[in-house]
Length: 161
Image 1 (cartoon, one colour):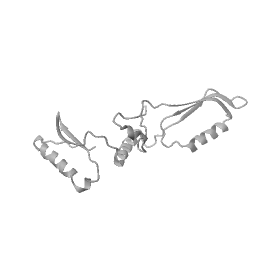
Image 2 (spheres, helix red, strand yellow):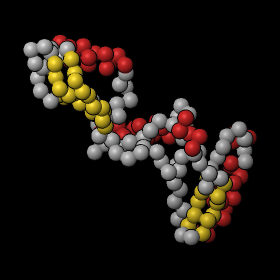
Image 3 (cartoon, one colour):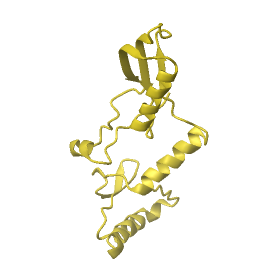
Image 4 (cartoon, one colour):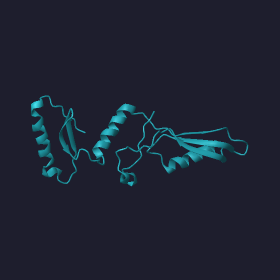
């Protein structure tokens, strides 16, 4: 999103005309451009500004940088695992809980490593397990198109506490 502050209200029409002119240039012919500008209740420019767009990679990068600055370089997403008791003499525990926090780097290999770690701690049998998440909501923005959910870019989004 580009925000432009216009100090002189007398040039609003000229700015709107320039936006229209720029988006008609050959550079943008193969692109889908959306621009929406208003001042108060007055709409100055609406060039597909009310249509939904798939975010461009540059938007994803800007979002990542903003989150990185907010959370800090050392932030790590933690997947917690705990049981209801220590294993008995047969290596049995009653229940094990796994609570995910949306780690985008969690892989099958990580889960296999977790299973090895539990075995090293003497756990041979788990009677029941629960998988949960501390993430809230559906993770689907109300502006998404239904078709977006099955696409590669349609990852569920969540926030942290």
